[in-house]
Structures are given as C-alpha cells and as structure tokens.
Length: 329
Image (cartoon, helix red, strand yellow):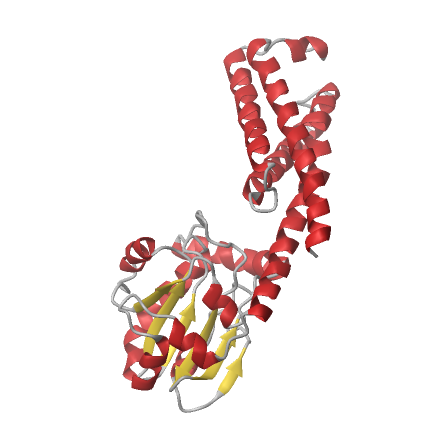
C-alpha cells in the first residue's frame, strides 16, 4: 500500500506544481495586463478592470497554495477541495449564463483552460486522499487492537479519572462526537442538554469524547450548559479507533439523508455547518454504555444523520447492540 501511494504522491506533486505555476502566471497576466484576455477573445473591456484584477489576485493566491501543498497533497487535501468546488461553481455559473445568452461562447476557452481541465486531476487527488486516510485508519485499528479494559484504563477525562474507574462507580454513557462545526454534532449536544437530567436519573454518567483541544471543548460545551460533564480530548481520534469507530464513507457523510436532514436542521433550528478546524470531517460518531469495565450497549452510526435512542442506551438493564436510525417526528 505504501509503495502504491508513494508512486501516486509523486504524480500528485507534479500536478499541483504545474497547477501552481499556471495559476500564478495567469494571475500575473490579469493583474499587470488586465485587457490582454479581452483583446485575445475580441471582447469589449469591462467598466471596472479593478474587479478583474482582483480575480487575477485570487488565482495567484490559489497558485501559491498549490505550490505549498504539493509537498504533501494527501495531507493538505482541503486546499484541493476548495479549488475543486470553486472551479465547479464557476463552470456551473458560466453554463447558466451562457444558456441564457448572457455569455459569449468564446469565453469557453478560458473556462476550459482555467477550470474544466483541472477537475479530473483534482478529483483524483481528493479520492486518493480519502482512500489513503481510510486505509491508514484501518491499519491503526488493527495494530492497536487493545482490549476494552486496557483502553478504559489508559484514557482519562479532564478531571483525571480513568474511564475504567468511572465505570466501576456507575455506568457511563460514552458519547463520541463529530467535529464541533458539524450540524449533527450540534444536534447531539442539544439533545444531551435536554436529556441530561433524565439520563443521570437512571444512575448513568455521561462522558463526552471530542476531536478538539480542551480549550475549544470548554467553550463549545458551555454554549449547551454541558461544561460540567466529564470529557476526553482526542484530536488524533485514537480512542475512536480503539472503539472501532472508523472514518465514514462518502454516502455516510454526504449521502442524501445527510443533506435533507442537514437542511431540515438549518431551517428549523438555524444549525449552520461551520469550520472543522483540524478535526477529521469524515470521523464517524458512536455511543457506548460501559459498566464495570465492559461494554454492555453500543450504537454505531450508519449515517452521521442518525438519531440514536439515547434513553434506551442510558439504561444498564439490558445488554444489546444498536445501529439503526430513529427519525424525528
């Protein structure tokens, strides 16, 4: 696997270096010779050349970005992701206005060289970046196949209690979250805010596991009045992997259900998708009920848009594994 990806990475680096040089040169031509491309296409000059020059500056910035991330394309895939979808939207915008008769066909040559031809190599890089991380994720899970007791003994909460110690005092509901900017992570925190007293009335303690720093977590959980809950910071998602919570597939993270439930939450609760920071946007969440060092219930999401049966999971009276979705009524 490593040899294959090394070979691919060399090709990816070359593509990004070429893309970087091309975009920088194109941007320079627009900034210093703003009328050149209009004369070449036999088009009249726009009224505000400064706006056109800003477009050139924008392309230059992308070019510099491509050169920087070419050192490690699979790690810095976010820059390629932004460029891919920016170009996709520009192509869609051109197509729309061309069909309305508001853009001349001659502009297509510029759209082709600046945007269309880059979609395929950028798409290949993005696919391989996702696959590389997915395979790496699986390797880490197999290499660190620790027993549950060892995992619980190793990880401590922000109050310096190990999960094993806590589970012998009372059942703990271990909630693995997605990144804080995720619409469904926000929904989970809203639900936990509402159900906290009911869950604790069953004698179960809630412990949150997140992908961010302790400082970020303290600020985020305070918004939902959950700052007093025990929590574990796991930016490298090692505890997630220890509980076999993998990175999601494209359908699990970007499938139809994810889109329509995301739109539903946006319209009904104003839950906007926001930045992930350095957190892994593909990391899947999960919930485990642990009692006396053993997992007695677990819920592994089939989609990031699932809504787990929280109250069923909070009760230690029945041992079960759950991985179905309950939709809101």
